[in-house]
Image (cartoon, rainbow, N blue to C red; front, side, top):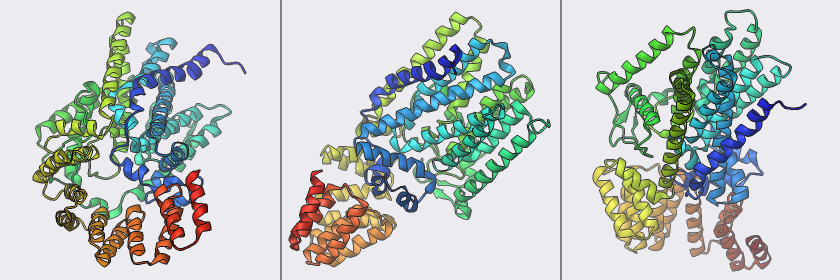
Length: 588
């Protein structure tokens, strides 16, 4: 079957154009480093070393709702090991793929919308393409693309959009409708194993059905809609139930967005009203982006900022409801923004009150809204084209500039400290960046600054201890690690670091106790096991050392430190043949 000219443009030219533009704008992001949680999810995560054993990963990960994301990390590791460029390429491809699905989604919504009947077919195409371009190029998306651990957001959004697109395609009928519905449910299931944002999908499908098909008011299509809806609601209800956290979700938590604040359901809700206003401002005026926003909790409904946001929100809702019959595209745009934001922010209050990656899915609604405003209020086509070109060029320039901030930890956390000067976390992470450059004097300065802001900053004491340990000041190192342990006894690294001090002082039993406690707190951690082996070798307890090495060789089959240590131990106990076999693995 030959494709028509319109199909060639939609299926070939649009994806190719989006790929080229996306690659150009994000090309300087490919040299960026790992950041923050990437160390936990990728660098030191033994599970991603087993791409050929998905069941091992499934049975081992704490949150199976992240299984698909972790498996993509495993595939990355199988091909690129820890070469960060490969991980960046995958994030970029997923972002471009999401932009392609945004084009498909908008194309179908535009064709269904009565509001868009004012425009001819070519203009509808350009409206869809512009929406995809805004989604692709807007600088607010840079966090998801550059921060590799946020791949779950990008991948989850891609599956979310595909679920909706395949539903609409199936709802339009045709011989492949059942296949489309089945594909939609499959994308929903994969989305549940990727990100919690999918719990808003039933509401999104219900809105689309009500706005464009109205099957609950007409007999035609009723059975098809309700059959699909029943499956979707059951799946998402069970998913939301598993993610709710039960009564623990109602307990107050300490805020990571403002020093010393406590988060309750009410304060979180009030704060989110203000945060929505900030998100809207960032979309319209994308300057001052920050990886770690300083957002104080709002405890009173009479806040001036809440009043302004509520006033604007009420005006938008009133405008939509007043013209409901003719403004269906506007209604779906606003609905997508709020449902996408709810999905991105999670089911229950989060310790981090505001983060740019939570806006990723919602940008689609804002892009649709901006597109319809440009086409409706700028009638002159030449003027509209000029405005669009300037707009997209501005977004692209700001995105390229923002990518540079994500080059490494030093540039990223320097930017955070500049924009959130009253948060201790930025100073701790900037200190770590200086430690990586062996500038311990500057690192200590920033760490004491962090402790001055927050005397209970466990990470600051831990880093001070590491600097003292490197300078062989064991008493000072021990004092700092003990402070860290006293602040939070559930963390693993403070116990491991304290054990290292005892090990260097040859207090083996105290060291063993500290390492074992570190493993109780975090069983998958590599360092305490390697340190326990050092104790066993010092005591000549070679059987215990060998058992630990064998376990580590299973968890970390490609770790050269583990394999070389195992080879040395085999040589030490006289098993030269086995030592040679391990060395052969090292040479491969």
